[in-house]
Length: 91
Image (tube, rainbow, N blue to C red; front, side, top):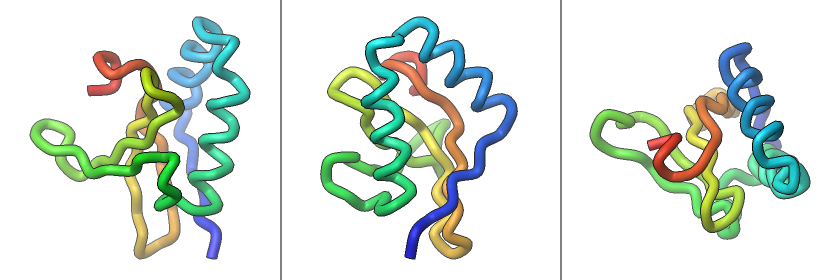
């Protein structure tokens, strides 16, 4: 069963800024979102739970340098992206 991505205005602003700074990553970013929606547990996403101040959030990889942090509500089949950027920006 596919998941539903739920985008907030805050995330959309962050994503727009990220894509403006990294236009070459647009294809990778969109592929990551499509795969996340189809199967968030796909091995290439490297989904993992976060700890510490980001407890309750998860992270997936766009590539080796860039990540998307997200709230993963498995029970409701919803995925809410929270932030996008390099390791230091999202953690």
